[in-house]
Length: 83
Image 1 (cartoon, rainbow, N blue to C red):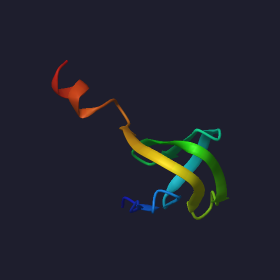
Image 2: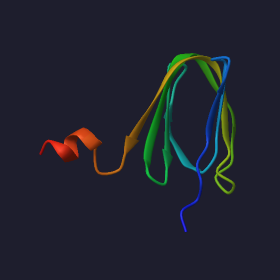
Image 3: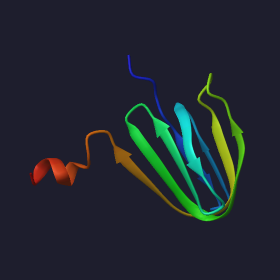
């Protein structure tokens, strides 16, 4: 059974996510997260990780959030359609 994943951004200042398996890289400008179906890239400035629990999968960070991008395992849908 696949575990649910949620991501919430509050006023472009706080991001929370569930079902995160690891924090792969982080700086004040970018955070790279992994979850069951791929990766999440969070771009911003002044980014700080507030909480990450590997056992529960809970993650939160603060800063000025500019964007979030999902990358699915096995490449993007576009790559799959246009081989």
